[in-house]
Image (cartoon, rainbow, N blue to C red):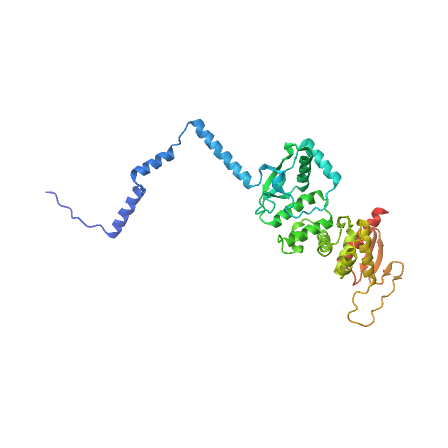
Length: 364
């Protein structure tokens, strides 16, 4: 007779081991009903249509994704009606358009079409009812508008454009300036003017910040000049009739006069309206500058003003001016050098002197 085995209850450790093996060997089941799970698995494994139809759907999906990627990157070119674009949605950096250059551009567009699209952005709540604002390509848009107005040809009724979405207005102003800086045809006054306007419209914290960001690629000296012309626009922009014709060195002289408190007198003279062209306008300004240079700067403390020493030479190579600036001529085997020393010197004055020297050398 076989001996019976004694049965023993499994321990807690054995039970945990059995449960772990059961979970590992048993596939996970969906919470859904069995028929629903079967239908989902079948649909996932099966795509309806012939091989050609499935290939076409895959191709369309890929092309749609490419389109979305190109749209997001601003690479699509649209044909936009010219009357849907507001050219002055932003203050432009260019204040003068050369007539001959515009005629050449119109001839080129008429003969060859517009080769470079303009850039626009969507307007929100436009007072003019226009759908788009112009970001860059002002001359191209105006040229095409002129062609359509003269000819009525339908091919000029729309214009090639890239739709942009600037992160902020500062980015839009920078883009506009970069477009014109490439051609290097903006005057310092135009650069200063657009920096002031960009700051006034809230695109930048201040005019200084606008110049620093909009002309980041410019040298420190060039940015200093732009700030000087920005100050001219801020203080005299509403009075000047021919600012674009102002020479660089004259503008720096005018900026220096404004820093020395000459604004009131300049506005008084310009307010008389006697400037009929750039030359006569500058003659009026220069008269005020000469007045200012002949007037002691500060007599508010009373007493007799200090007499300035006369200009005199020390030897043959050193000249001391009445303003206290000493000019010393030096020479060596490499050529000549001029050294300026004195408390009256400033970076602005050195820039003006350098421009005078350049003009002297180029016109000699």
